[in-house]
Image (cartoon, rainbow, N blue to C red; front, side, top):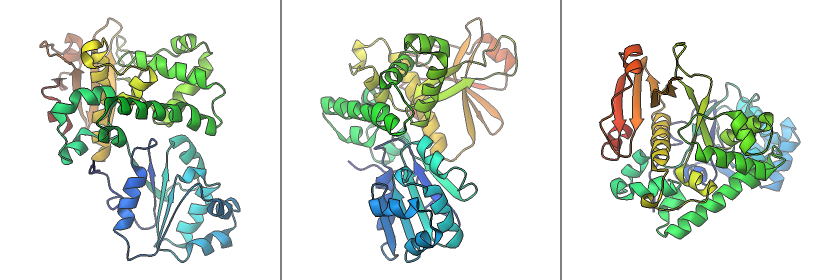
Length: 373
């Protein structure tokens, strides 16, 4: 099954700028890159991956003459999984400074490793595309029957390979393998994790707390580690595109909680794989958590696709009044409650009194597409 991505290389490629495409493994970065290269057959293209030994030796040398001699013959240079190429940032800077007319495209599967490699050398010299699992908006463009498949989205998520697999057991198998790659192979490759089991325990703790405030001390206690390690692993999981952090919305009222954070999983399927739970919704007691996680991430995807400057928060008071999602956009405030079943809830009284200009909507399976289109 083919899906139409709404983020494209063509819309983001620019003279004098390197384009970096990053995001989780197996989300479609290579597919996006190759689709662009197929439209450029009249140009001289160099395309390889970070596994290429000769390529790695060229950049490891940091020899300017050698790197520029490599780049000179090509109009387009596309390097997949560029974080595995030593000194790629410095080498890419040499290329774009010497040949500003060339199109140079890099992809990477970890914001931690790719930022370590290209961060400072390419400051002011690159644009980026963050590619996430497919958005409802993109599936709709691919004639996917969204209303029919909604329960599967909540359980199995929206990775392209998962969506294309009709067999539910195979969907779960794909996700389990993906989580294994995330939490073990990638983390160990980054040499940032001493205990993969602890990292998995931290991820499980977050999976059970989706939609709730997270205390680092509680996470540390549950994962049987110290607070410093728990905080570092939370940061690592975010940089590896497993989770997304959001903070409390506050205008400095004493009653508002602003110091704690909530964590959502970038994909519901990954969240469920972490806790080995792929039962259908009728057998689950976490449907509300799945729904809130799904809506939050779909809003994030829409913001990315439309290249908007929008910020997302939650709102909660010490007395228990709360709003699931608060969005700031173009100076306006929008608030949302995510409810699998609409029981006619109203915005909390303190919210209405404090932010009378803010809109308030309840997002349910019956109306959710209106907020994501």
